[in-house]
Every structure is written in C-alpha cells, then in structure tokens.
Length: 186
Image 1: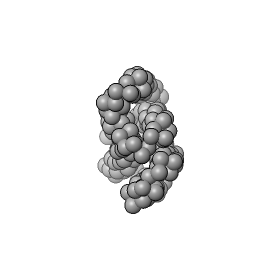
Image 2: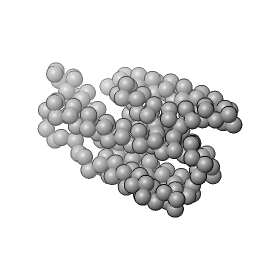
Image 3: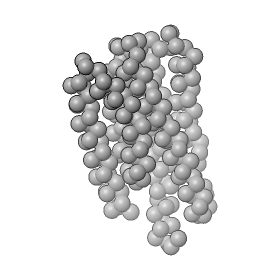
Image 4: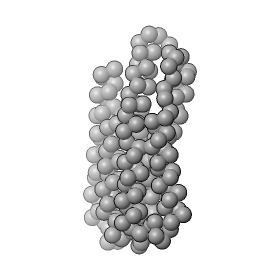
C-alpha cells in the first residue's frame, strides 16, 4: 500500500468511527417510541426488551470499538469490517422491526412513526456511510425493504408504498452523490 492509499484508509477509519458513533442511539430511541406507543412492551415484553437491549448494545459498541492506533493497513481494514458489521446489524435489526410494525395490527397507531423513523435512518445511512458504496446500499436495503414489501402487499397502503419507493430511489441517488463527493474530497 502506497502513502496515498494509506492516508485514504486512515481518513476512512477516522470518518467511519466519528460518523458511526452518532447514529446508533437513534435506533434504540426509535424502537422505544414505536414499541412503547405500539404496546409491544406490554404484549411482547421479552421480545421488546431484547430488541431494546440489542439496539443499545449495538449503539454502545459503536463508541467502544476504537480504531487501531497502529498504521497497519490490515488492522485498519479488519477494524472497518467489524465496524461495518455492527452498523449493518443495526440496520438489519431495524428492518426486522419495520417489517413487524407494518405487519402486526398491534402497531396500527405507530406505523407512521415506524415509517418516518425508517425514512430518517435510511437517509442518515446514505449520507453518513457513503464512503463504502456497496456496503451502504446493502445496509439501506436491509433497513428499508422488509417493511416496504409489506406496504406493497397491503391493498390500503399502495399510495404509501409508492411514496416510500420513490423516496428509496431518492435515498439511493443521494447515496451515489454523497459517495462521489466523498471520493472527490479524498
């Protein structure tokens, strides 16, 4: 690895750490709102608290898992892979929650909140983690698509599904732009 590549990798590690630390708690808070107002903590307390704990552990892992101090490229790449696993797990777990909230009548009163949280989390994912285009696109898909499929299957939710699909296209176009901007800046 030459000096330029080494500096780019160091910058990506720094950016990943700083940016990942911010978003993890929003998954936790979104679940407390959606699950709490949706009645999940009353009707499904074990699952609800397990989800809350998982979101909290993943959020804290983003703070606790520090980048390597050494300039070793292989250690930096390993660190990036682990951090991306943590970030992607947060998105995948929210995707499961989004699926559940769109499918279960218990969440009738909080479906809009779950959808809004999903839109916000997907947008943040696209702008925050644009430096790894493929991983970011995959994370957004895990976060967004499960619930979107349920929306498309609901005959009363077709207009919402259409708007959510259009918004997903916007998120992916924003991701492409943010990725190009990040690469140019490097």
